[in-house]
Amino acid sequence: MIIRTHYIEQIRPFYGSDLIKVITGIRRSGKSVLLQQIRDELVADGKDCIFLDFDLLPTRKAILDADSLIEYINDHRGNEKLFVFLDEIQNVDRWSEGCRTLRLQNCSIFISGSNSKLLSGEFTKELSGRYVSFRIRPFVYREALEYSHELKREYSLADYLVWGGFPAAIEQPDNDSMRRYLSDLNDTIIYNDLENRYKIRKKDIFEKMSDYILVSNSRICSAQSISKYMKSQHVSISTPTVIKYLGYLKEAYVIHELPQFSVKAKSKLSYFQKLYDEDVSFNSIRCHGNRFDLTHNLENIVLNELMFMGYSVSVYNNNGREIDFRAEKKGNIYLIQVAYSVFEDSAYDREFSAFAALDNSAKKILITNDEIDYSTSTVYHYKLKDFLFMDEL
Image (cartoon, rainbow, N blue to C red; front, side, top):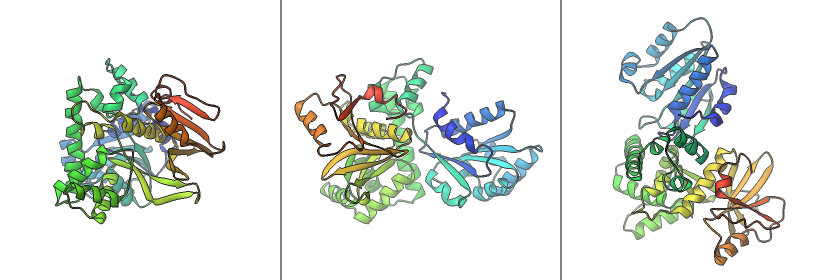
C-alpha cells in the first residue's frame, strides 16, 4: 500500500499531543492502513506502540469494555510515553471513557472506526473537545495512479472518472469485478450501516432517494426539489424527511454539500446547495451499461482534488450565473469553471460567459478534458490531466 504522506504530514505535529487523534472518513477509504503507517513511523523512531484491531475476534474477546481496555494497556506498557492505536474502537463498550482516561496516563491515542454502531461523524460527539480529527478520503488520482503502479496494473484517467478512488476497487482485475465490489460496498454503507444505525423503517423510500441523490452528483438541489421529484416518481416523501435522510448520508461521508457564496452578501447562503458524491463510483454503479456520467463525475473529481489541496470551496453566484467553484486558501481566491470539453462553440460560449463582468481580483480558471489550450488574456485553461497533479492553483 502506498504511503499516504499527504495525511501523515497533517497528523505528525500531533503525535505527542494528549489530544485524541481521530481518523474519520467513509468506509474502506484507508483509515486502518493509515493508522498502521503512523505506527510504523513511530516504531522506526524507537517509540513504544500498541496497536489493537477490534475487527479481530480474539481482540474483541480479550477487551470488552473501557475497564478491560485500560487494564490491558497498563499491563503491556513500560515507563515511557505510550502510543496507542485503536482501530474499529466502536466495538468496545464505553470506548470514549477509556480513551479519555488513557490520554491522562501519558498515552498518545489514535482511534478510527466506522460501522452501524458508530459512524465516523459521531466520534467527535463522544469526546467533548478532547480530540483533533482528520478526514481521510478515497484516493485522488495521483494516489490511485501510484497504487496501480505498485500493483503493476493500468488505471487510466478514464478508469478513474468512472470507478473512482476506493483502494480495493483498484485492486480488482476487471471492470465487472470493480462494479461488483463497489456495489457490495454501497450496500454495506447505505443499506446496512445507515438503515441499521438509524432504524429506518421505510427502507425502500430511503434507498430510492439515496439512489437519486448519488446519481445526480454535481447538481443544484434543495430538499424541497428532491421531495417534488420523488413524488413525480410516485414515491411519497416529505421535505423534513428528505432533510433527515440527507443528514444520514452526510454523517456517513457518502455525500458532501457545497453552499452558495453570494457576491452581494459576501457570505454563504444556506438555502442553496450542490451535492457531490464522496467517490464518483457511487454514480457509476447506478448507470446502466457503459453510459457513464463523465461530465458530472469530472466536476465531482475536481472538487475532491480542491479539498485534498486544502482549499475552502463553495459555489459562486455571479449575479445569477453560476460558477462551479469559489476556492480560497491563504487569502487567495480562485473562481473555477469545469466542463468535460469546450470544443463545441456553444460549450465554449457557455463556460466563458460565466466569468462575464468579473474583475481580476480573483484568478479565473477553466478546467476541461481537452488537449487544446483555450486560455485567454483573463482566463487560465488547465487541462484535467495537468490539474490532477497540481499542489496549488
